[in-house]
Image (cartoon, rainbow, N blue to C red; front, side):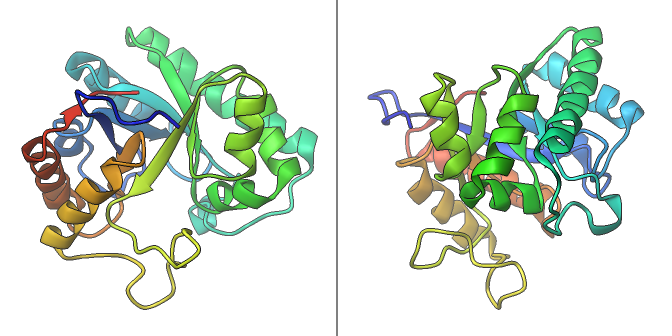
Length: 233
């Protein structure tokens, strides 16, 4: 993890291309976009639209890779063999990479989505498969197997915090099904983002969270008011 510098630089990211939010509105605010690669949501046309607009705005593009499970929006943990998951991740990164290139930009990092994100915190084999399928891309996530293996392999790692999610005493996110897991108070989300910025490289506002389009500008304003410069990954 990068220690905060004297000029206080942090990234603000959101999940885009999932067909559940206003991508244009969020692209006007965030500095990095985690783009759904078609396995849990999105398609080539949506990826192209997001990449084209991100390129114009100077927003960094990340591959939001997932289990192949559109029915459950990638939020159910699956036992996928290493080689299969590796190839699925490679397919997603490759598809988005080709589309991004055609739009004059590139994929700058990889971030697992949903159940895969949480599974790779503890599951060494699935973490290894995600890394094997994503080439040498920097990795965005929370502390655990995925980031540890990436760092050990000499890859750049970015630590992430979630402005609109509650954390448990163990430092993990409170499960979505638990009361209070998803924050919906705009002032609380903004203050939480400022608190998180001191210990992470990137602050996330979930694109599929109710009110995300209103929360993201408030988060950005709060970060800038606290002296942070926002810069994409």
